[in-house]
Structure formats: structure tokens, C-alpha cells
Figure 1 (cartoon, rainbow, N blue to C red):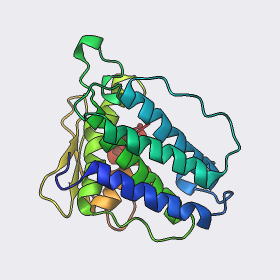
Figure 2: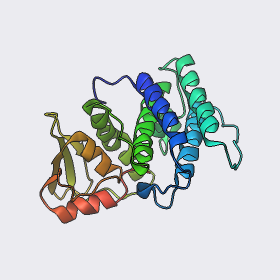
Figure 3: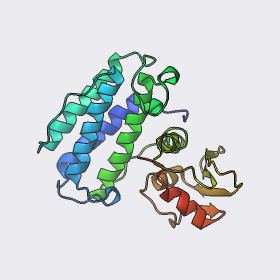
Length: 241
């Protein structure tokens, strides 16, 4: 986890900016990085995820929100507020249902409320980027530490979960991200033991967006050290849900 990020404060900031952009967007605007989604799908998705995550933090089943259609701005505002208020009230070290424990025996569960501070802040950051760039607004001005945290979460949480649940095979290469702004590589370890090493170098934000499928391996800012074909295969294997 990156130093220098306050996840609860960041969550509130990113939610506020996301909410500000909703009335500026045509709900039918395509969001190119999210398949066939339009802005309306993106907003409803993030609102539903906030509502679901709040229930996960409380260790409760969420109350169904219905199929819609929804008035996007108040609908998002309500679910965003529920999440913030829930996380503010709960002890961060209190046990919660989290993605850390999917596919793990109950006796080995480690998830706490603090998990959702980070997961929802980063979820909101990525979808804020989606919304802003889809409608031609400036992308979020998050610090390097936030984008490094995005990379670290994929390497240490999201991709291991994908492998654990059988959604992605262990990659055939040991892939390391080297953000230009830091000295520490972030390693996505494979399970094949082939000894292949691929290094991806570039700005932390570009590397994070690459990992989340929002940038191309051919981006001018990215340098590939090793086999480009292997790197592309690893990235296409499903690092995130």
C-alpha cells in the first residue's frame, strides 16, 4: 500500500468530483474503456458498488436498489453518502466481508473495514477517470501516490484474487512495473517458474491505467524491457475483475 494516501479523505474527494461531473454529461455518451457502457451505466454501476460495499463492511446483505431507471445525480449522491457514513462510523479494524477472503477458508479470513477504505477510494478514482475523459473533461488530479496505490492493489489483491478464484491463470512471466516517480518496483508474480522477466517502465498513472485496461502497451510513455508479446499476454489474462 502506498504511503501518503488518506483513503477516506480521497474517497470523499473523488466522489464529490464524480458527482460534479454527472450533470455535465449526456447519459448516452459512450465510455470507451468499459465495453458497451454509456455514462448512465457507469454512474449506476458505481452507485450500486458503493451501496454493496457499505453492506459488505457492515457484514450484511445489501437491500436491493431496483432496476431503475434512476435519476442519476441524486441516486449516486445517496449511495455515495451511505458508503462514506458507514465507513466513518465503523472501526477500521473491525471484521468485514472483503475480497481478501474470497475462496479462502473461514479460519484464515483477514478482511477488515479498512479494506473498503482503499478499495472504494480506488474504484472511485478509476471511474472518475472514465467519466471525465469520456465527456472531455480534465482527468482527476490525483497524486503519484494514488496511482502507485492502484498498481499495488492489482499486484497484491485484485490479481491474486482472480487467480485464486480460477478466473485467470497464473501468468507465465514475472512482470514488474517500474513507475518513473519511485524507486520501488511493483511485481506481479507468475506461477510458472519460467524465469522470464518483463519490466514495464513509465509514469505511475499510465502504468495504473494500463493495468486497468485504460491505456495501451503501445503508449509513448511506456517502455517495455523484455518480450512485448509476453507482456501483452499477461495483461490480457485478466488482472482485474
